[in-house]
Amino acid sequence: MRKAAGMGGKDERGREHVRVAVIGSGFGGLGAAVRLRREGITDFVVLERADSVGGTWRDNSYPGCACDVPSHLYSFSFAPNPDWPRTFSGQPAIRSYLEHVADTFGLRRHIRLDSEVRLMRWDADELHWEIETSSGDLTADVVVSATGPLSDPKMPEVPGLAEFPGKVFHSARWDHDYDLRGKRVAMIGTGASAIQIVPAIAPEVERLTLFQRTPPWVMPRTDRAITAVERWLHRQLPFTRAARRGLLWGIRELQVSAFTKRPNQLGLIESLAKANMARSIKDPELRAKLTPSYRIGCKRILLSSEYYPALARPDVDLVASGLKEIRGSVLVAADGTETEVDAIIFGTGFHVTDMPIADRVVGADGQTLADAWKDGMQALRGATAAGFPNWMTIIGPNTGLGNSSMILMIESQLTYMADYLRQLGMLGGKVALGARPSAVNRWNRQVQARMERTVWNTGGCTSWYLDAQGRNTTVWPGTTGEFRRETRSVDLAEYEVVRVGERERVPVSVAAPLPGALPPDPRASNAGEAGLASGEADRAEEVV
Image (cartoon, rainbow, N blue to C red; front, side, top):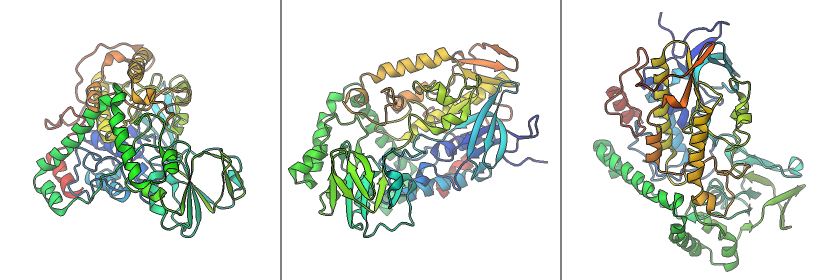
């Protein structure tokens, strides 16, 4: 009798066992699921803690939420969408796209919703991962963690917050049942979410006060509706869609050297950002408060054509100081400014360099990933960590981008994941691959050495790219093309082969496909594109 998807059998204790467990169902998790199926692996599950797929594009549903990467670049290369409604798509369109991906590629039967991972522990005797979830326990030969760095909101510890009598929520946990109309609202933070929220809610609240600790650099957002003619062309002539995506990608690749090698070249961009501000902010005092003192690009460059006009409204106030404490319904800034409000919205980011999932991963030596990374996150090629065999992460340390689409990085990591699994299949039997500490350290030293010249390290700011020790463990200091080449295949010399009861070193060799796996699709390039059988590709274009 044929087994259901994800039902690979039982372990020695009668628990369900699968070949691969994917954690999370955002872009990384769904992309991993598609690639696994392309590799002929159907014995896997996708564990999702929420009640639907979508990751950060499910969680962030605040007013005005949209992507700051062009739509045709912020989508899977193997699932093109000719019908994006806008050049920069909003959250509803992106979430709908991810739902379509799940349907088009037959992923629903692999996805387990309401299944939060509570603990993952490596069993060195059985060479598999024991996984405890809110919906039951299972084991897996390989874990692919795709929880993403923007999944767990960070709330600051503000004295008096617990006693605040009004409404409080984070931008990533928006309370749609709370009516902001006619309320006095405080927005804490000036990051990517805040600059979208401020213009979206300013017209409906009684008064909006923005607490700004550090001003961002803001460039115009050249967003527009994509015409029916354009969408028709992209459907009927796919090369036009590919050309559009290629142009968007190429422009951003050319920009990378200014961020990574020659930050002084960014002065012209600063001038354009100042001109953008001057068009809407006529008050010189307000303009001075909004002008950053650090090099553009050191923090994430934000895109908005509505942010500065919103700040120029008479019913919007800017407090150019961080929130210090709360006394009843009064918010007190570090500069002593007092503001009474009915609601507080925190746009204070996420646990990026201290991801909570790391506390739930216990490796070969009984150490949690959080402990292993206490002095800074590091993973070989952004994917594997020493001491955690057969565990991989998507969007791992130093894989973030400052100017392009994260989907490009995700697809590169999926190519690496696929070859990792092929290598395991070639080795045969009960086997695991563990990243050698020397390889991880060498990779990390190389990345950090390249980081020294970048604008993120030299631009004179403190950003969420940096960890508690001031190291940049978040961003990739190169082009997406470079990363693609670095993750094209697994080098077995960088890994220790682990078998039950022994450790041995295996020479580098060409990987054979897993037993029963499909042969590689000749149309799939080394550009991190997960190939598809022709019928699947056709369905992708029809449905997505």
